[in-house]
Amino acid sequence: MSDATQDAQVTDNTDDSRYEIHSDGTLAGFAEYELGDGVIDFTHTEVFEKFSGKGLAQELAARSLDEARSRDLQVLPHCSFYAKYIARNPEYLDLVPVDRRPEFSLA
Image 1: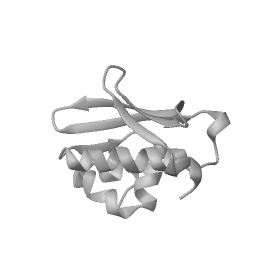
Image 2 (image 1 turned 180 degrees about the horizontal axis):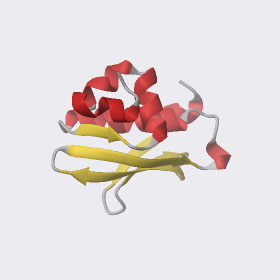
Image 3 (image 1 turned 45 degrees about the vertical axis):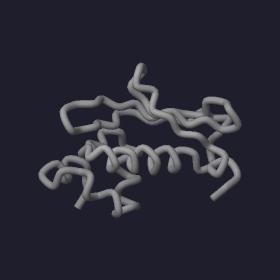
Image 4 (image 1 turned 30 degrees about the vertical axis):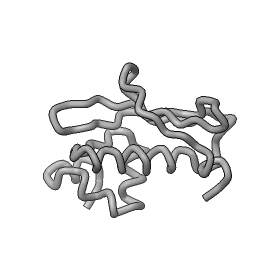
């Protein structure tokens, strides 16, 4: 874990429907979502150029997926970053409904 991810804070900004990651108190990126009945659909992720290459996008994905699990939400990774992250981290695969996995190229 880098210093940037160790000091990162992830919050759910429900007013803007996005998880935000802050590094040293500065907004470093976000993951937009749409929340439905028992489902969270991640639609877009962005980490600002100044903060790229520090593992913040991965930290943002991990923490938001952990929260989705704790809230018993199913995940739809329409954001390609989230789909790739889940493919590389199969411990999150169970969050994606089995019948929707082919849509995201997930086994």
